[in-house]
Amino acid sequence: MTTNKVTIIVAHYGLDRKITEQECMSALSPDTKTKVIFIDFEAGNAKLSELYDLSFDNLALSQQRKFVDILKPVLDAHPDASIAYFGFTPIPLSFHLGYLVGNTHPYIIYQFHHTKNEWYQETDKPSIDYQFSIKPLLLPNEIQKGKGDVSIRIATSFNIDRQATYEVVPNPENEFDLSLETPNVDSLFNQVHIGDVVNSFQEILNAYANKLSDREKIHLFIASSSGLPFALGTRINPNIYPYIQTYQFSRNETPKYKEAILVTKEVDNRVVLSEGDRILAKEIRDKWQEQLENTLKPFIKTISGRPTDNWLQMVCASDDEYNKVSKHFRHPWTSVTDINKTSLKHDRIDTETTDVEDGFEYIEKSNTWLLDDGFLFGLSKRLITKTDTDIMQAARLFFFHEALHYSKEGHRLTREVANGIGQFPKVIEEADYQADVWGLLTEYKYCSVYEGGRLKKGLKSFFCDAIETAVETMWSFVDTGNELNIIQVRSMNRFLNWYWQWVLIENIDGPGTLEEIVMILLDKPVIEFAGAQMELRGYRTYYKLNAKNYNNYQLAAFTRNKVFRFSPNLIQDITDGFKNLNGEKIKTGLKSFQVTIG
Image 1 (spheres, rainbow, N blue to C red):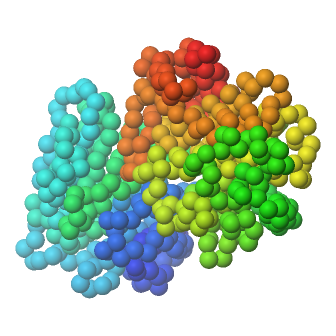
Image 2 (image 1 turned 180 degrees about the horizontal axis):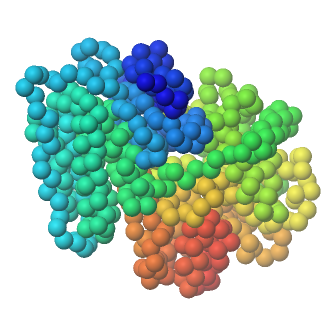
Image 3 (image 1 turned 30 degrees about the horizontal axis):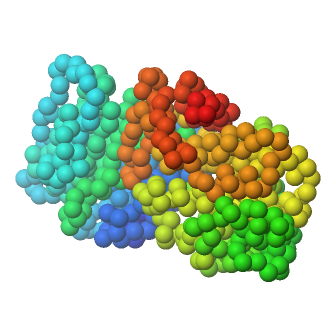
């Protein structure tokens, strides 16, 4: 008997094997072939030997974007459809996609038989006498209070060595083992057994929610075929289970388990763009390309034509101006390259590419910039509320900053070096600050050549406005339209550095001179925030901003050869400013700190 119900095939592959529509259709039962929608969902192209070292953070973001673009609209348009899941991906990606899909559509898990090399919905037992049996679960009977982590081990293909999990989670407050009496790679030979494992997982989740609600994070270790993790992921409600850390396994590595994707409710807070939003983003991208060709490249040629000894002399209007500021010019600033030695004079923007992981990408071999619609629209949305900023200046500051990063004569922060650079926050903080300062002073030179009107209000006003534009560009990368509950320590430090400098520049008497500005900019502030709960995600460290105990919050600064450490009167303004992406509040809190220092 056939049915008119829609079947959505999700061909989810991330290993070095593509799943074709033909092989999926061949595996479907006749009653599900009436109306089929095929989704080609590529999530990478890795070999088995490469899985342990994959950048799962980036893969998760890419998968999130692809889900929003190609799968979620189909699911929303067909709420009564069923899913036929064909999975050939690393376990963390399979679980993550299941989480994104949620428990909204019925599904059938098709699995790839490891010896027959074909997909099946139901198959034979591993052996004639094989008995599928889940070991009894040991669940808590009473409510348990207190912070701590929970480990869950799910073993259907192979047993999981407890000691291997202790290498990464040495002291879990609670442990649960969901395992079979006889694990086997073909143990899940029908949908009933898959459902049994998923229901047992739900029992553990219910125990966590009802008896262990104080626990902070679930650590999930899975040894199974790739279809099961998708089914498990559909049971995750981010409001009840806010932090679930998945792991990638390798028997040849130490430790054998490595953190992969942290499934959190924050991951899902990505802005979905309307057609009008994308039209605006295209207009901005076209204008940025026009500016790059018509003014930035001629600007580089113009200022490079004057003989100079270094980049700072190049941005000064005259030798007299340079002589005044050069007394503050010392190592490492003296060895920074000039703009003529960057690739910016050869670069172009790809005006056709609209979706780019992490907001932007630079293709070195073609000197091409790829800019994401979400980045451009988000930046425009923030700048439109700031009367003293504009999106064309944001473009220049962005390209100046990144040009120094990518230059072989500059920071050499190529794609290969940048991958995973978040695990070195001190290094990237220094590089970011140097590129920011270099970009701001280059923007000063640009405006003195092309947009002199910006300088008429005085240099103090000009640099405050330019810093505001640069910082709003930084905010656009984390602005999802929602309150910010967590922020990378590296990102907070960068914001604090620049709001600190903004306040110092604002405090200059009169309109300000270039010497006064340079003296501030070339002296990188040393300022840190402490007191908020911290969390390690992958290689990145975050502050949690949702804690209510403001009494623990402090700032420390090293300035004027002295260490200052205390809680400013308006410390809550700083944390509230970060939560609400509101720079004015952060400035207010920092002003109260600077006033106390004197």
